[in-house]
Length: 426
Image (cartoon, rainbow, N blue to C red; front, side):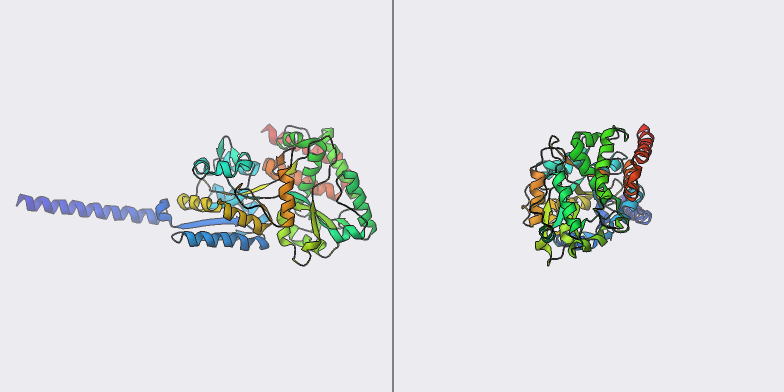
């Protein structure tokens, strides 16, 4: 009898534990609090122009095939809209993985505690060896927060046939040769340079290269870090050198009304001869004109200054508040494999950052690959990726103002200096 009662109580206790457990699970599901194992769905946001989306999707389809248990949901967002929304996502209710940029752009969010530390993934997956060249750009305060994808070499896309028609025998290697080429192109009835100035970062590429060629990478990085006054004569020299191109009307007319998506017809239709842009742009060049397009390094301005280049790295990040970090890490590990890294780079017209990836066979990518491989003066990330966001935004806005009215250099630099003091004083 006693045993019967005990067994009955044991059964009641077991049933109550079962009920309590069920209630706990229900409460967790109702409140939206689930573990990585329960989460199931993996939400990913990526920035993509139209011609980049299919390359992303191919990689995601391969991941889904290799990981059928993961419910992958990808949202594609245009680049400019993405930049505006990124901070809001990370601070509130982020997806599990986001695409972004290395350098200061990544560090900006890492220092605010909004990114997952991926140092253990770098150690476990062998990324420290395979991605040695971009590890520094993926690191903040001794920890890695980014999984690198492709990176771009920057230089001039140019029309070989228009060069020949204008009597330009070879690619200009020096600034004087470049100015002479611009003069000949203009005389032949062609706009020498296309620039999508409505997208302010395309102007920032010009500032980067002129500063790197005139003052060198060490000075450039100090300027990016807010350690140099904008009223410094070395900064003014960048703008006065740049002004020569505007004074001689070497850029296309009304450049401030064109963004990157609307600028390619100038090269494709032969209305402009050159454009300073990253190798990714080659993916948007139609096949029927590709054999007429060359790619060359930005010319030397001062031969005493070691040659440096822009080589910005695109990355994937896991937000600190992501709900499904386990599957997010699986996705990153997959995307970082040499084959996928090479596939992504090839589809985007970029260079693979994985040292075990196959070297690109596209002629433009090959030139870019060799440009970065033979750079002795350092590799910068890009103006708005090397600098604090607030200062970069003000600097690029000033570049558009400068482009609109290049006579106002002194007033513009004085305003930038006041802005620098305000931002970096904080």
